[in-house]
Image (cartoon, rainbow, N blue to C red):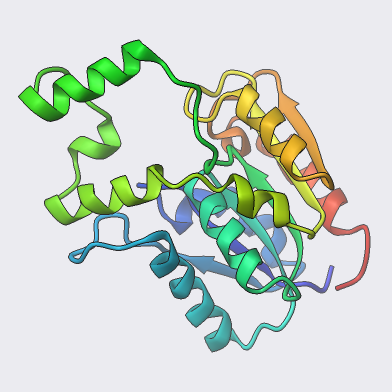
Length: 215
C-alpha cells in the first residue's frame, strides 16, 4: 500500500477514535489524522471544515490519497471529493451521515418542544455545545448532500452497522443507490461505530479494498 490515508472522525469524537485502525495502517503507509473542532468559538459551515482538511493536505504535500471517514467525517469527505475529484483515489465511509433522514412526527415534536421550552433531553451532542457550537451543529445536520453524493466517482466502500440508530441501514441503501460505484457492507452485530464494534473485520475489509490497485 503506497497511498496515504486521511482519517476524518465523527462529530464530537476526535482523531484518536480511529486509533485501533490507524495503528494497523501506519506501519504500511502514511496516515494523516484530522482533528475537527466540534464546538468552535465562531459559527462554522461544512465548507469551513473542508478547508481545514485542505489546509492539512497542502501542509502534508499530498497529491493523491485515500480517505477513511466516519459519520460527520463522511459529510466532509463528500464535499472534499466534489472540490478535489482527482486527488481522492478511494473512499471508505462508515456510518455515513449526510442524507436527509425519514420524517418522524414523534422525533420532530420532541425537537420542537426541547428548543421551545427546554423540556426533554434533546440530542446529547446538541446539549453539550456552546451557543456558536449549536448554530454550527444546525448548519451541519440540516445540509442534505444527496446531490454531492451522486457526483462521487471515486470507488467507495460503505460500511454500516445493522443496529445503527444514528445512520440506519436505510440510509446506507439510499447512499449506495445514489452513488453507483459504491460497495455496501452491513455488519449484523455493529452499531454506529462499526469500526470499533468489529475492528478485525473492519481492518480486513478496508485493507482488501485499498490494496486493489497502486496509488
